Each structure stands twice: as structure tokens, then as C-alpha cells.
Image (cartoon, rainbow, N blue to C red; front, side, top):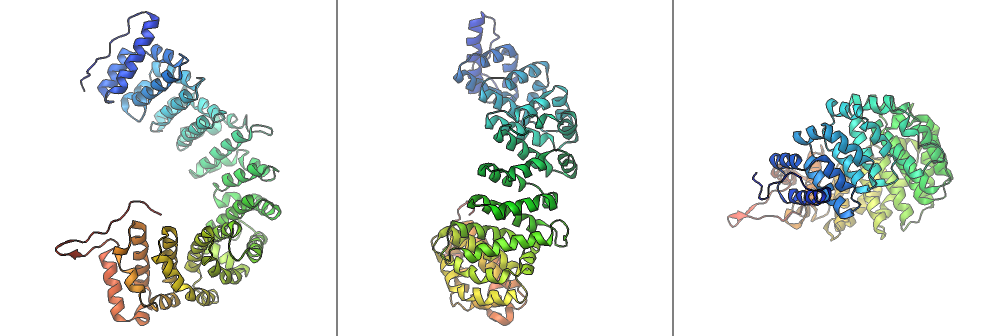
Length: 503
């Protein structure tokens, strides 16, 4: 905790005081940030000197001072929090928030955001007017500043005092620059913040509903500006499905049907599929049957007209299909529509596509679909279409492309939920040997997925009659050993090199 060069009080002329202050700031940055060092620096360098340095007009000086402020006041140290809440801190913060430098404004906001947002901190922000300052900063023309302010307000909204400050005390502030004709980037930033707050709690949802956010988003969906449409869809996707309901979903469906821009159509379709998939299984009121019919007509029609060799259009459709089939509710919607058989029929061809994104999307869509297609007639059709694909999938699992390897292993795990899948997989003479050889894999995700396939196989109620007692014993031994087991080799561990990355 001892300083090699103790900070000396500033007693010289104004010009030399500024130079001395800068030197002291540089010395402070060269020392470990301990409570003793921070306290001595604050006692030696008055607030006026730091504010003066920020007003020097020198970018390099501003950068140095901002680094020092982060070290001095960043994080949730008790001493840094106490300083910010002191009279000195209450003067520093307004100077930083109104500064002409983007870096200074952003750093000041991040200092406020670095604290634990409990009632004491949020209450102090409100009493000093800093919560209102953060609301104003959301519409800063510089995106980094606006984003930092949004992140701080999201933390504040998680507390009762923060919600009251945002939605009651300053309820109109967010919408002052979010009206028709306002800057679209600012407008979208405000909408994104409200929709993120919406998700936090039932209390946040009720307060968010009272804002014009949802109506504004609907208006953007109707815009002729493709970029605005696309961003509006991404923000709407943040909302819980029940909050979309009958008023927005038809707008999304109508926009998708009329949309000529593939990127926007793909996002709209995926958004609708996500809402359907995330609804409770017994929900039959949030969206109408007619709307689900529209969804499946779009999905089925696009699949029927797409390039059988695969391309980005097909990849987008398959991504939407994977989202829809990620839940029982989503797959049931697909099955009841009558669209499922046509999609199941063409899906194996896309798995074999030479277009890499199409193949990956098809592997994921097939994996999710097979998890839920457990009853006739869909399970029967899946057997007819996917069982012959097993040798090809095994070649992908053995292959050098990590994403395709993982995709094939994930699809094997879904196939292991079906008796026909077990029969087709274990009919391959080297399937069990490959799946239980951990030494072939060089990254953790592959070991995890292999273990998942064997575990699902061993737990299937018909596994004994399909593969016989000897293989069942081998499967259960593998599961008991775990995904990363390595047998001893010549008295030492035969270690598998496992990379840390997850694909």
C-alpha cells in the first residue's frame, strides 16, 4: 500500500496546478488501485482540478482522466460509492454528463451503472436528478452514449424506485424524441429499452403497456423503409408472446405476406414462429386459428417453391422451421396444419445440400422436429425419410467440419428417441465403436454430444430388444464413466486433448 511517489497537495499557480494535477493522475494510474491509494489521491487532487483537466480540450488528457476515474470510482467499492454520493461527486457527475466529449459522457454513465442498483443508490440518483439525466442520455446522438444510458436504466428498472422514477416521475421524457418525424435510430433505441424493461417482471410489463411502445412498433412495421421494418421486428421479438397477441401478430403476418425483401420476410417469419412456439401448450386464445393457417401457408408455400439444392432463402426457411419446432406447442401447430408431411419429405434432401448454411440449418431443423414427431403418421414418415440418411450422417460425424459434426451428432440424439432411429444407427457396423471412442474428438462439445447420443440410446425402453444385452451393457458402462472418462494407459492417464471453445 506504500506509494513510491506520494501525491503532493496542489499549491502552485493555476497553470502549474493543472500540469501538476495531470502528473498526479498519471502517477495514480501507475500504482495498484488500493483503498489507501484512492483515498490519498482524492485528498491530494481536488475536484476542481479533475474537472479542469476534462475541460482542457486535449483528447489525450481526457482519455487519461477517464482512465483514472474508472480506476478511482468504477466498480462497487464502498469508498467509490461514498465519493460519488458526496458533494464533490454530485458536482463531478453533471459536468461529465454534459461534457462535449463522447468518451467523458460515456465514462460518466458507466461509473453510475457500475454500482449495485439498490433502493439507496436509485433513490439518490432520483433525488439528484441523475435518473432524468440518464433518460435524456438515451436519446444522445452518439450510439455508444445512448446504449450505456439504456443499460443503466435497465438496471434501475429492476427496482421499485427505479420503475417509479422512469414510468411515473419522468413518464413523458422517453417519448419526447420518439414521436413521428424523430430520428429513427433514437426512436428504435427508446423502443428497445422499453421492450427490454417489459420482460423484467410483471410490474415492469404493466408499466410498459401504458407507454406508446407497442403502437409505435406497429407503425414501423407498416413503414416503407426496409431497415426500419427489420429493426422493428427485432425489437418486437423481445416481447413475451402473450404481450403480442391478436393486435400485433396479424400485422406481422400481413407484412410477411406482402414483403418482397427476403431478409425482412425471413425475420418476420422467424418472429411469428417464435411466438407460436413459446405459447403455452393449452393456449388457444392468444392468436387465432386463421393466423396460424396464414403462417403455415407461408411456410409450406415457400418450401414448395424453393431451390431443392439449397440457398440462403432455404436456409432462412429452415431456421424459422427450427424455431417453430423447438416446442411441443410449435410442432403441434405444424402437425395440425397439414404442412408437416410435405416438409418432412423435403428435409432430408436439404441435410445433404452442398450449400453449407442450408445443410447446417436443415440439421438443426430436423433435430428439433424429430424430438416431437413421436406418433404416427409423422413418426412413420420420419422413419421412411431419415433412416436411409444414417450412413451420410455418420460420415458428417466423422468428418473434419466441426459445425457439421455437431449437427449430425445432435440429430443422432433425436433419432435415439425413436425405436426406428436406434435400429438404423446400430445397424451401422462401426456406429457403436465410433460413438464410444472419446480419443477421436478434440473439443468438448463433440464429447458432450456423443455422450448425449449414448445416454438417450441406453435410456430408450426398447433398447435391449433392439441391440441385445452385450451392447446394452457396453452402453451403460459408457454412461457410468461419463463424457470425459479416459482409461489408464501404461500406468498413466491417456488424456484426451479438449479445447475450451463451444461450437
